[in-house]
Length: 284
Ligand SMILES: [Fe+2]
Image (cartoon, rainbow, N blue to C red; front, side):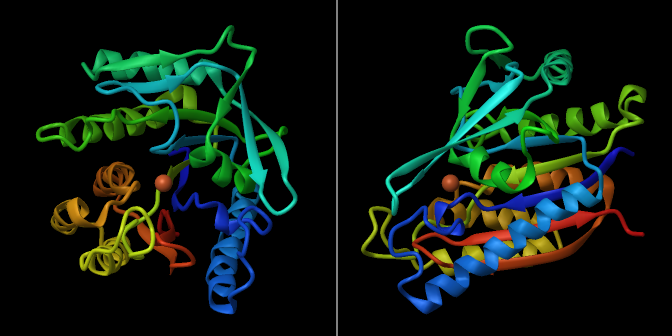
């Protein structure tokens, strides 16, 4: 199978030095952020070492539709990151695979999944992306590649009965990667999402007793991603407020079919929300 790896990655700006004021003022905070930075740099290196040509990425902060999966059809992604300390905006360009995105869209449609394309102007025009994709891609891609296929889950993904559609998206993705046209390619799936946002009473999301149990549950789920463990996370999510919960649902479904093992994982709390990095690969 061309799928070589699945990653769960964080997307907080605190990972990248200079993006958030005060990042390095507190040694504990700096150490937590640096741990994630090193892991993200490692993932970038792995992507290059594994000769990954195509990355499917989804985040909860991109283009979103209330009820539809969205698939980007533009062939250039324009990331832009604000470095608060210097007052500078840095632009980054990533190539996107418009043709593969269109095939993915078609297959989702054929499976009866509600899906719409996103296109800005014409397909060759760069489309702006948010930090949800931009921060992971900062480590993973470059103007030379790998090419990106960007999609998002619907905003109603968490509503009753809609988890089935998350499973449907994961199934279509795996079926696409099994197709003969993909045989010659190396592919990685990157799920961008963070853990509980309710670790700090001084922040607008506030504090909840279930923030820490949720984050601990995610780290246990990474090692043993069973449907039961994922359901426990879904229950805690109401209190814990995690932007990564439905992306993790995609991973849950894919790993049920693939039966891969986790290769490494890390957790850190360098800000008011928890962040996890994890990698799954086939057993060698
Ligand atoms: Fe987020």
